[in-house]
Length: 128
Image 1 (cartoon, rainbow, N blue to C red):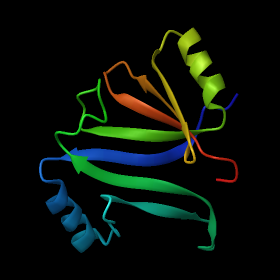
Image 2: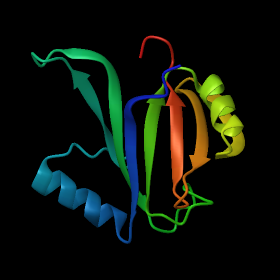
Image 3: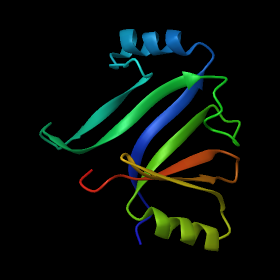
Image 4: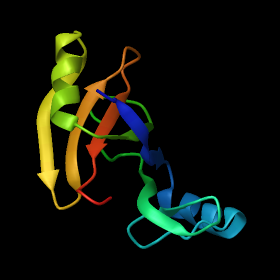
């Protein structure tokens, strides 16, 4: 079974999220949207769009989205078989959180790495 197939997103917290978003927009040209981030569309070697995106987002420092981790970031990794991978990780003794979310955006689960960082696993909907 394949495990991680790519990075689906990078999420991090900032003391002044609006100011940091503005900095990235102005100085690095990232098209930060009202929701606090952007979706980078994947392209092939010739620059033509292909199926898939990578989310980049800055949230407020007081947000508890990454709990129980106290880290200021969370990486979202794309996977092909979330349910299968969660089972394998549990069998290997990993700290997998009980909750699995399913929505129009796909399936999500979380594991805590040995350093206490919350890692998000994401199985995109079919066709993405």
